[in-house]
Image (cartoon, rainbow, N blue to C red; front, side, top):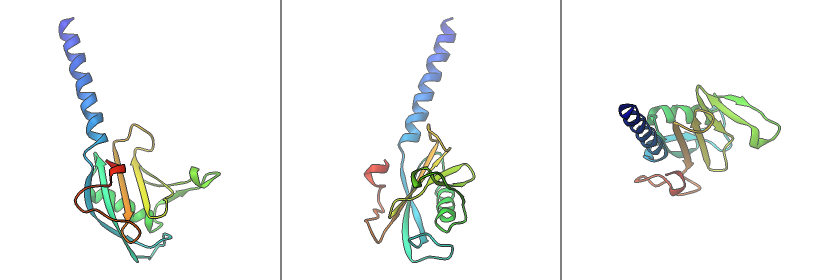
Length: 134
């Protein structure tokens, strides 16, 4: 019984640490080039990419590149707030002006998040992700 409680307690600690790790650890990646509004061949603006959780910069950049060049599957809801893009297991709600987010999987708890910020309309810090993304 004591061993079972010890294992259960260890499992809870690992679960809490895993959730904490996915909630923090945001990091700066490279750039994606895309136009606003999104277009298949637009490359007018630079967007800084940030990630957190269990993903690589390469995977996040590739996903955001597909969304922003309209190569992702588009799902139209009754309203824009219900509409999103999907790329594999990533789900990306329609972007706000100058910001595009994606999460993996589609619903919480998320294992990974990606963010692209248009550098011409807002600052794109290269040393750390924006405070609202950490």
